Length: 394
Image 1 (cartoon, rainbow, N blue to C red):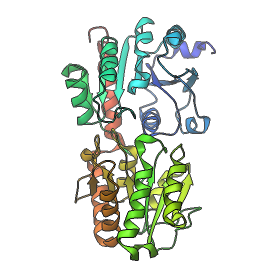
Image 2 (image 1 turned 180 degrees about the vertical axis):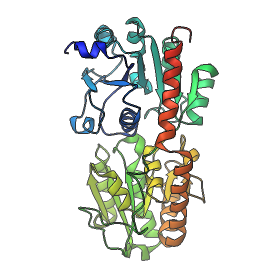
Image 3 (image 1 turned 30 degrees about the vertical axis):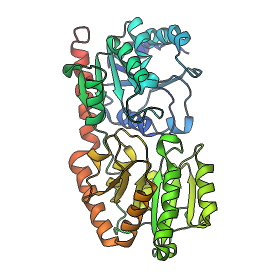
Image 4 (image 1 turned 90 degrees about the vertical axis):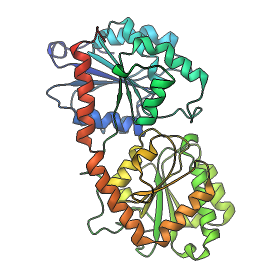
């Protein structure tokens, strides 16, 4: 790691050190990029520390100049052996604030305290894959163990705020609820209000109804449930075989299971695995509806991006999804893991295009009113400024 330059040491702007488990494609990580890109550059500097790895292509989304990136390549498990290295890095960087995200990065709070970092903030962005309902005593104990080293906690949504207050014991004065914001300039409906052609898609025929999802194919995102729901929808309404299509964007270990479900039902040709895409705004405009079958969520960036794109949303009633999607107004909510209910939702949207379009318009309006990127950035900056004013007294 190169030492700070003289110019870096002379820069009086406070440095925020964003600590994540891995810096790669994901909703949490995308939120970090949005925050770095939109906090006023004349008032703040940034560094990103990944406890494990950094995806260079994803990191290239950072547009703010001078953001230092540090990957520590930590093995699985608690990184006690890495704490001295983390403390040395914090002493080198001399951040005004260390901001960790989720349980996997929370352990960095102790080295930050050890290194004398004056401001320490932690963000709860969503449930852990192995603890989707937040009942794990082990995870609660771990959060409580690190609680003394965290000055302020930011919860993304009311549900996570309630968990932090009631289960972890974060006092009201140190707990803040901030919703993700979405860039409504990048994410917007297709100009004519109809699905736009998507590069590489086999389903650009305007006569089709294309339902899609975007996300890493890992357990908590539950794409195999969506694959089974798609099969059931076609079985319930055979006429939809002529129109209904499925697009799955993302990579991960669940792809093979999804493919097997579709192959076994003989409908593999009606679905498209698009892989990882760097053009998510175009992907959204290439869909007729968005589906999120997750078992757990915080504030879902992809739901907000879909709503900003004018899409009706079909999602599971987990985490803060109910704080984003208004059933019957901007979309539909179904129980997690329930392929039958998800199939019903797919059929309902595909069979009522006018109604689905009305849900999408209402979703766009809701994002503009409640979930703008400007509101999110202002809320984070308010917390950071509070930390800087009296970090040692908090």
